[in-house]
Image (cartoon, rainbow, N blue to C red):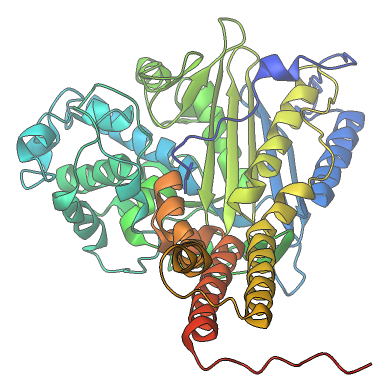
Length: 510
């Protein structure tokens, strides 16, 4: 969801990576080949395969760059039910790591004199407004890039289930914001919201008179030689797309999710690990890959510069999260759609870039999916593998999802036994206090079991329940089961209390 929680879900920092028990020499590429030494490749392979087993990941693609060189590319596991293997050329849906492409496209247009970062959105989209038109009129292009426009998380997650592929899909998505209330004045505070980047995508369309998808293909994919990347499922470059999966508790199950064109600039670009290494090289090399430049070095520096503060130790730049002290700066971003996950990491001081693409997702397994890129980084910079980057299998978190069902079952069994006990004693509720505590209060608990999650979950995760059903289907199924149990038992309780009394078997004579 991109970082789809209220959030950007932050990967572990290099400070944590430093808390290791063994220190190793950094892996340095061979001067002759530009490749990592075989021993280093073997160690990374063993680590990735162990993490895939620990998190039950079907398929993963890895790319590593050092300066202007691709030092390692590898695919692991399966890309589809037909058993085809993941390769460095296998396309994956990127999720929110798409945002850095949209930011780069905006900066290209800034350098071309077509966009002013300080201009209000309404200069390019005169029809744009939210529920408070006066407040939204102050939102600037820079604030969209830095995620401090005031737009809320919740609204940016409403379109995940939208499968509109029409040419007007992106504009229609932006126009749906007319009823949305800003959570704070423009420029005041950071709030990660997908709609910031869908608006940017629509601005690209407005100033270029071309589709967002066509612009990305011609101005980014083509000069970066990203031949296995696409901005639409219909693009021939996406024909070998890996099959996405969702976790059901601990098990990955294949799932073909909606592909909302309205959210392409925020989270639905498609690329292979090999193509993403070209992109990372440009990010580390002042905007240039081989003979082609996609942005000037000063423009790229501005794109990477800290913008809105994210807590005390990080800031959101333009499609990147920036953290770390001078000399150990890092830029990273994770990406989530319901059935794919990705991670990008740049260590500019070490001239290292890493991409990991994964064909499964589930919010309850997010920590495990974010770990592998941190372990690879630890190995590359000479840190050993610690529990922070190589944790044991987490069986507890998926198992805890079943706790609401257990609570509901215990409550229903206990309530039934209590009612039967009152029946045997002839202590029916009657009126007054007995009716209150024997029927009305338990009935409120029954209804509470049925309805609480429908109110709490969307508010807690700032996500519509329909989208929760996409990202965590196991949680949604449990909510449905608890709802059915709560309402069903409320009906049965009422029938037991006010229906015809059931005969009570007398004790057998001795």
